Image 1 (cartoon, rainbow, N blue to C red):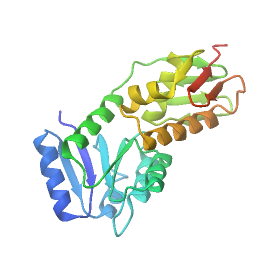
Image 2 (image 1 turned 30 degrees about the horizontal axis):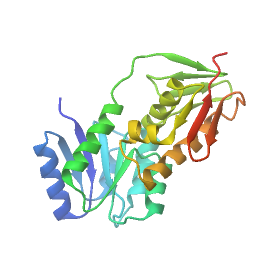
Image 3 (image 1 turned 45 degrees about the vertical axis):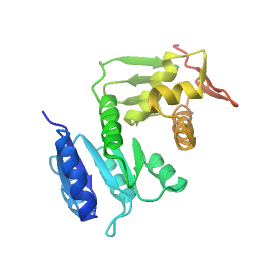
Image 4 (image 1 turned 180 degrees about the vertical axis):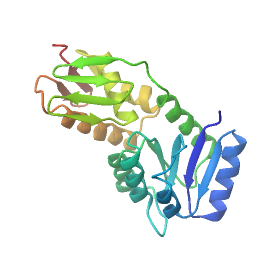
Length: 227
């Protein structure tokens, strides 16, 4: 079965080129020039595996569209296309819950690589319950549960959390996390990591025994008690 991509891009020339290239790579692409058309199908069957959203669209920007999609499909992977190379745009996308971003004009081969990397992370993980202090992580449902309430994780959040758990009780270098999970290491991916670490800390506020401690200039040290 082909991977189904939702492409929201209002530029007719760029959208057509992107659609044709992705189809040559054996993806099935549904291209929407008007983001309102995407909103209209959210309540129906939503057959897509990943969304590629342009940030700058006239009737509705990509951030607003992503929020609406994630409200209905909380773990839906999203990659943003942005014509601006500004930090504020990238951080905004990450805070919303996007999995990745790429600046236009983008290298089609790089875009395909990023899509495939995201799709690798979206493959089903064996069902398991992992205990961390007073929390449980259900890796199949991407659900972090606690007596005070449940939190639905994004794929990237769970990926990072599982990496931290794998290195529980040890010093974890920032560079190792970026190389293994982001597969690149620059200023923006470093800031992306900080955003996700901040989110995880907030999720574990109900148990002070769970610690994600920053080691300045080095990385992190984590403590996830099993009892």
